[in-house]
Amino acid sequence: MKINIKRLMGNLHEIGEIGKTSGGYTRVEFSKEYYEAANKFLEKLKALGLKAWIDKVGNVIGEKSGKYEDFPYIVIGSHLDTVKNGGLYDGVLGVLSALECIQTLKDENIITDHPIRIVGFNAEEGIELGGTFGSIVVFGAKNIENENNLEKLSSVGITREDIDDSIWNLDKMKLYLELHIEQGNKLYEENKNVGVVNGIVGIVRYRIKIYGESNHGGTTAMKARKDAVKTMSLLINYMYKTADEYKQPFVFTIGDIDVSPACYNVIPEYVELYVEIRDIDNKNIENFMEKIKNYTGIFEDIPIKFEKVLEKKPYKLNQEIMKIIENSCKKNNVTYDILSSGAGHDAMCVPKNIPAAMIFVPSVMGISHNINEFTEEKDIEKGTIVMLETILEADKSK
Image (cartoon, rainbow, N blue to C red):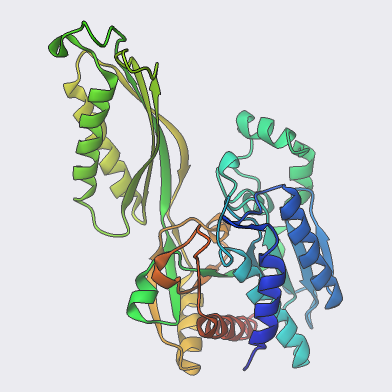
């Protein structure tokens, strides 16, 4: 089956370029630019005759009727928000590929047995809320009780009641399918059109706090110092060496460092590291952190504390739908590889008793969260065709 790639690319530029500046594309959660894109997407859903609305936490939802309204619905989509100065394709491509599937079904006068729900999620990037906020809400509102989250939500006018009103009845959900750019370089380097995703890495974030002692930077001998930055440097070196012991997709990142009192002539008394670890195997994450914590025992007179601030377990995607995606690739002469995702996605918020699957399309040079983010039109077309074929095949079973 063919899709209208010109229509898809037109929609991508019309909605995806909302929030464009010289530095990139910015539609952060709950922003004016985000809601401008959300309302434009809403208009397109209504123009197709779908029942459509924006829920109380900013997700855009549309429903296409099926032959049997008592059948559970197939959910397709991705997220509409971006990071600051992000790229054109991240998230919104998946939303508009899903829209193109709906438009093609209408063009071909195909009515699926199952109703289809299409969604553009809010706050998938949502750094202040820990990410994937919109999907966490609709799939059951887990992890929202944290007081810090509720305080941040109140600043954008969201209440606990708004969250409760936005939760879906998951008894009426058959499966979730999401197309997304890879955001890595595996498919690009292998010259593959599509990635069949087998799982999404777990993500753990820590604040590591190092307590030294401030003193005069000019009069305190080097051996007499309790220098938090020196301790930090030794710890960081050990962390990078240890990280090299693990294989892909294991990654470790230090995203920020705070030093106090941050003066030229004062020995630092306090350092805080912002650390993130990702892997498809949660045991590797736990093992890595155990080694790091054990290593800090050599610093007897400098206390070091570890505060876990986020934990998202690895998520295995549904093998039956993966097989349907593979068969759709073969049927349409689409080259593919099986891989895991090093980035978090809305799909990982789907409860494990509901099948979820993802289709990746290549990111040129592996660039993402950047104005130079790019996916070739031919791969977008092939990925969307595979998505549509997967929907139709999955629709055959009740």
